[in-house]
Structures are given as structure tokens and as C-alpha cells.
Image (cartoon, rainbow, N blue to C red; front, side, top):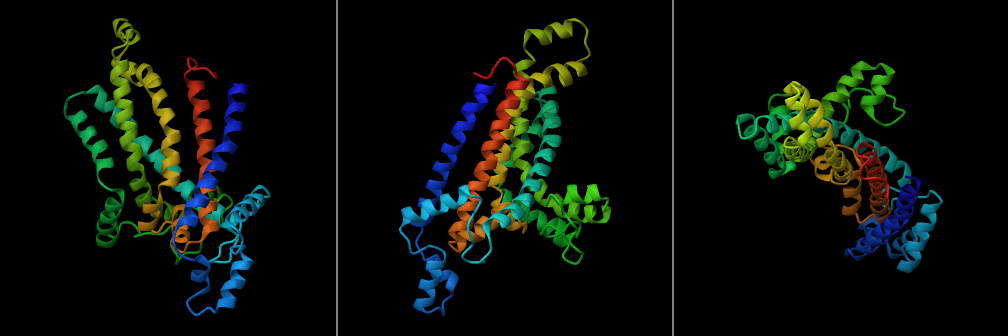
Length: 335
């Protein structure tokens, strides 16, 4: 295990350096001058030059990259040329919102997807199976931003059951937080009124983002359970008179979930990096919306910071998933 962990930890810096280099090159190839955009249309040439010198944008590209990476290794994520704010604290603030949304949507997807998979496999080719497959296929076939807009119109504007967007009611005082995740912080502090407000704002974006998890978990788990149900140990369990419910919930689930667990790292990573549309449509103040606004303004430091930050988190999540996968299934080992 230690050898496997050491090999994976040695690969992580190589991946992140490659990611940083790719992001830096692509961001610099985009046409446009971020300094002129940040200075404004009325800025004089000397003001533009001064701003470029202030943010190091007048140096050669290789020197800019090395300067940025040197500061990054010292914990300096740079400054936004458009907001004049430090990127590091902003990344933490926006990332906690995205992380909370990702965790809640993943949990919601598992709570819905696992029972759908069991029902679908248990009553194969009958109406519960057809209904489950309709849900899972529809969840990935329909664009999620379209679903979000439709739900906004129906649930928020017409029925007024949920907020149109945002993370918390601006008319209520924003609660004190210590982790940045509102549901956790308000529950721990016992502020149940603020917890209820945060939960209402969470329902719509969490449901929309959970659709991918529901689809993948339902299809993956259903297929694995249908394969395992033909195994000899399942036939022996039935022959010994073990109740069918026990066979499906214990014997089949325990083995079928191994592949599903391996998918969780991919799903969580995809949600962290692919939540831009959900955050933009539903005005969720997460790291995806932060990076999108920076991209529209050609603000390189936040773009680099958001990409590398999400990259670090995804790599760590995949490492944890690999370790967990090998713990659940000892046959794989840590070679």
C-alpha cells in the first residue's frame, strides 16, 4: 500500500505542472488584451503600460509562467487584474460553495440512483425496469441547463415554491460560517431558520446537478447486479433458503457497489469542474461562475488559479477513490 501511495503521490506534481502549462498556453492564445479591458476604454497608453507592469504582463511569456509558478509554490495565487483582489482567498470562498453543492447533489444522486438500480434489476423487463431506464436515460439526454430553466419557471416564478437563484436570501442576514458550507455551519450552530433558508436555495441546483449521478449510478449498478445475480454464490444462497430481500440488499449490493464506488471519483471530479452551467443559470456563487467571469474578462490569474485548484482537488479525490476501491475489493491489491 505504501509503495502504491508513493507512486501516486509522485505522479501528482507532474500532472499539475502539465495542467498549469496547458492552461497558461491556451489562455495566452486567446485573442484580446486583458490589460486594456481592465484599464477601461478611456485609459491612456501610459496607464495601460503601468497596469501591465504592475501585474507583470509586460514580461516574456516564459518569465510570466516561471514567476507565477514560483509564487504558487510559496502559496501566492496571484491577484485578479479585474477586481484587484487576491485570488487565493476568493478561490476558497467560491470553492466551498461549489463543494457543498457537489456533496449534496452526489448524496441526492446516490439516494435516488441506488434504489432505482435495485428496482430495475429486481424486476427486469417489467414496468419498474422501464420506468427506471426512462429516468436514467432522460437524465443525461436532456441538457441540464434547459431543465434548470424549466424548473425555475415552474417552481420559482409560477408556483413560488423555491427561489429563482442564488445561495441565500439577501434580505436575511448572512449567517456566520466557519467552513463556508452553509448547511453544515447553520446545523452545527443550531441556527435552524438560516438552515431552512439555505436548504430552500440548495434544492433546485442540487437536483439539477444530481441528474448525472442518478443516470450513471442507475445504469452502472443495474448492469452489475444483473451480472452478479447469475453467479454461483447467489444460486447457493437461494438454495439455502435465504430470503430474496436479503440476497438483493446484502449479497448483490455488496459486490455490485464495488464498480459504482470507482465511478464516484470521476463523478465528483466532473461535478466540481463541470458545474459552470448550473452555477451560471441558477446564479450559484461557486468556483465555476468565478472562472467563467474571469474567462470573459481574460483575467488570467483567476483562470489559472481555478483550473489548478480544481485539478488538485480532483487528483486527491481520485487517489482516495483508488484507495477505497482497493480496500473494498482486496483482490485488486496495491501493486
